[in-house]
Image 1: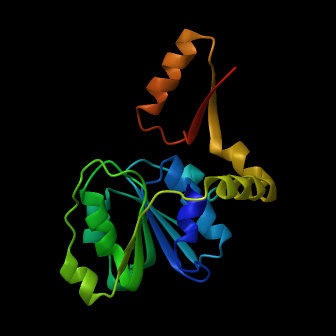
Image 2: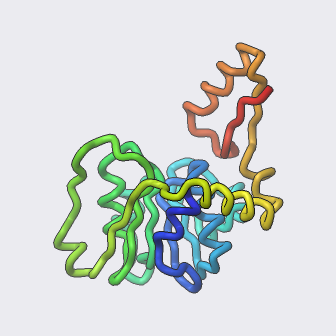
Image 3: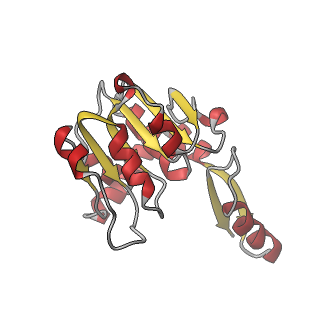
Amino acid sequence: CALFACEQLPDLAGRHVAIIGLGSIGLLFSYLAKAAGARRVTGVDPVDRQSLATTFGVDEIIRASSDRWVSQLSPSDRADVVIEAVGHQVATLGHAISAAAPGGTVFYFGVADDEAYPINMRLMLRNNLTLKSGVTLDRRRVLADAGKFAADHPELLGRYLTHTFDVHDVHDVQGAFELACRPVPERVKIAIAQ
C-alpha cells in the first residue's frame, strides 16, 4: 500500500519529505522516500523513534505532536511533500496541510474514520497545494513490486519485523495484542506466526 501511495506522489528525488506519524507505516514511508532519493526526510511523532531513524532513512526526528511541530515550523522548514501516516483522527490532516511548502503535495494515508474532514481551503489555494489520498489499485502488480523492492533491499524486512509471537500460545497472542496497543519506541511491526 505504501509503494502504491508513493507512485501517486511527485518524484521525490531531491525533495524534502515530512512524515507525520512514525509507526510501522510512517517508518516504511520514510524508507521509501529515502530510497526514492529524497534530499531530506523529517519524521514527526510524540514517541521517541530516534533509535530507528537511521535504519529507516529519517534525517531529522521531531519528537512532538504534529500540532506542536507545525506551530513552531519556520517557512524554510516546510516540506515539499507531507505524508500523514497517523490516521484515525481529523486534526493531523490539517497539520499536514499547514506543514506543506508552497506548491507542495499532501498525501493522506489510511482509511478515514469520519466521512468529512475539515481542511483550510484558503491555505490550500494560496499555497497551490495538492491533496491526494486513495486506496491501492492493481494489487497483484503492486504486490509483485513489493516483493521485488524487498528483494532489492534485503535489510529492510529484518529491521521492519521487530517482534514475532507464536499463534499456538494464547499468552503470546495476548502479548502481541497488548504490545500493538501501546506506543513502544523500538517496536515497528509485529507478526503472529506458527
